[in-house]
Length: 507
Ligand SMILES: Nc1ncnc2c1ncn2[C@@H]1O[C@H](COP(=O)(O)OP(=O)(O)OP(=O)(O)O)[C@@H](O)[C@H]1O
Ligand SMILES: [Mg+2]
Image 1: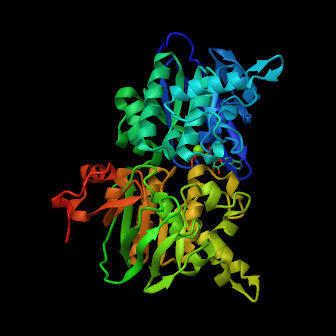
Image 2: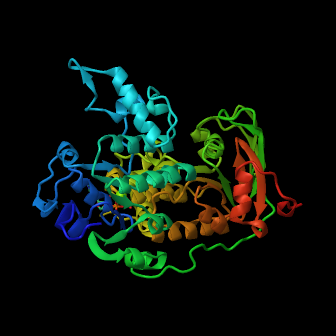
């Protein structure tokens, strides 16, 4: 880091308003040579807005940007790219019907005699894919990749532009542990090559590990800066939230003998050779751990009828049911907070109100008419409970920050009062304060008798919230851990195909 010369990038007094929202208010930011600058803050604090301004996607209402001391107005993505700035979006931005190679070089394809040079394109794509450790043929369609792989393609794309400043907006939120590790290596390598990185994450452990400096935003304003030796979990939380968070995981177990969900020899279309069996009691919170690709999401989507089971039985509160679409699942009182909220969780064009009431519309309607007042009251109460940041409930969900969109997904299932709530990575992209709020809600729901089955790659979260952990490995439930035997080692042991040790077995 060279502080003698002017910063590589300097933003002064940036301001940005949206109808009803001050997203940025007088914000300053400096980025120096070859440093990793983390930008943290609660959901809706203004992080993504700031990055979109730096990357030429939005113009600020006020303020200046200087690049190596020279005042510059960044009016377009092309101009940002020409100035060496590249943004990897929080919400993925790839074309699903194009190949990996076409996505990487979209708009700047290698050409020969004026035509796109397909061979060269594939060759160069292969090289950058290798750099990010993604073992995929470059001709593969992006639509057939997992979200984690798509994220790595975005990263490969950024690297291929030879940017001097790479902005990563929550890059690890959909990566597996292994993919995250290779991203950290890439960041390290980029830094060594003199590239500066702005890193946004709600995972404070990662920030502690990677950042040379931290800039904190709160409610659209600067809320402090931490130098390398000042970075700690508590210091970050305090500046972000304005208070310390205690009792992070709250769980009051209420035991019940009543089985709410029973699956016997269930075979999912993803892993047809692995029959799955388990039971969940009323008021129980069961965590599903395992590596990405272990079949966790597929178990949830099968129970919700998105990808119907090939064989086996599902019994809900003692009744055998056939769940072959999500409507049947909802009718049986099953809700799903999906992994990919943009695809299955919310309707982006619709308001917070309309999204919240989606699964409950029937009970809110009489003779074909929706009780508008009841619908509004429901959406209002959910917005308050989850502390969703938006000017009002009529705001289209597409204008909310990533974490606040997740809160709307959770709100709609809370409103339905399900028997069984399936949650796939429930706190992805959610800030520390709201995470605690979601954990409290999970506990509250369980206390009212809801059975919760949740998938999470966040080990702390699984150990903190689950009463029981099912560990999946290669499509099978490789083992089960009870609270008294919880440990990170035993989860990892089972997740990587280890057998149940005798001491972790419970009769
Ligand atoms: N296009 C838009 N129209 C209206 N409001 C917007 C728009 N874009 C952002 N906002 C609002 O500006 C505020 C800042 O949003 P931003 O996406 O920058 O937050 P963030 O810090 O990235 O949050 P998260 O951690 O949840 O991603 C939020 O209140 C958001 O709802
Ligand atoms: Mg954001």
